Length: 151
Image (cartoon, rainbow, N blue to C red; front, side):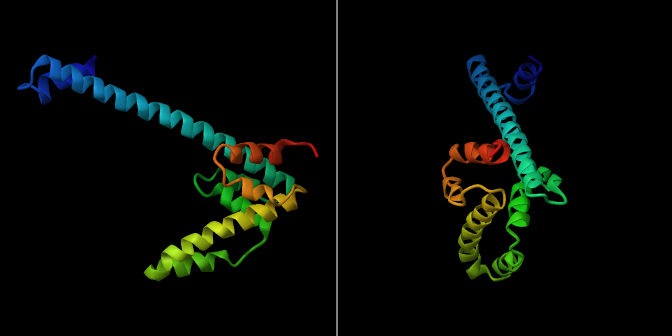
């Protein structure tokens, strides 16, 4: 209600009331969409962090809490369990040489699949599950099964 009064009194004094209501409705729709997006993103973050934390504990990492770092936590867990310590050089080369950047990005995508392959093998799961991780929604199921199954 307060936002509607603000928009009517300040920003749209020369526009008729029907247009004001349309703008208010659009602003409300955008805000509601943003709120829904943030809630879904929060659930995805918590789920993946919990799953990679459990995988880190299964792999007996010293610091499975890295899984909670937003954005890169799951990659850090996959990197530490795969024991491939040369990957930062690929990122440095990709960042410093603009032409190579796109190729480095593709290579980094392949390396991420390899990290997951080795991560799954380190917790006694089939490595080919990492290929299934490329399928949206299926990747959440695969990570959950890898993290919390008792095999």
